[in-house]
Length: 168
Image 1 (cartoon, rainbow, N blue to C red):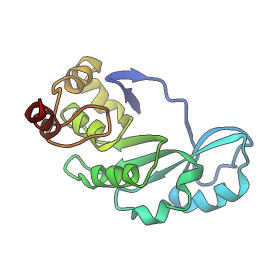
Image 2: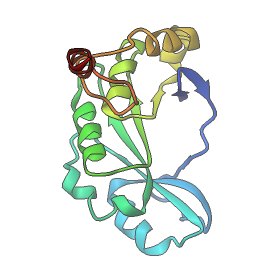
Image 3: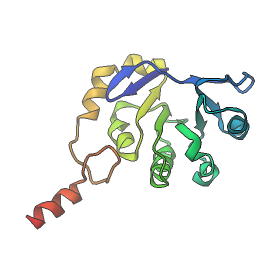
């Protein structure tokens, strides 16, 4: 899998655990949603915990765990399935401040929208990374300076810019 952050391919500092793997005493680990409750009970302060969830997850499922989580990865099972974007926005609205990752078959054209919804990183399969290199992801990130959507990436929306211009 290739990891994209700020339009660049980067190394992943998180370790994804299989459900049968033992929980380590320390480190940055990602567990599946069914394993989350157990991991929260077992892991101490030396571990940094993340979870990977399906894009169909109800945000309420994660509410109790959110304060302890440093990372949430939302799976995108298909290119045309955008439910993960909605889930990302809902988690950000509920105060999640950690790393939010989109994982799956996303393309560079979806990158600005992913950033606008609150994602920090995008993880794609190696076959997609071979077809869409770093230059395409960087170009996609910088394709728009504003959008109609009020985002989480620090960029203002077109509507906010119009309001400021009207007040001047």
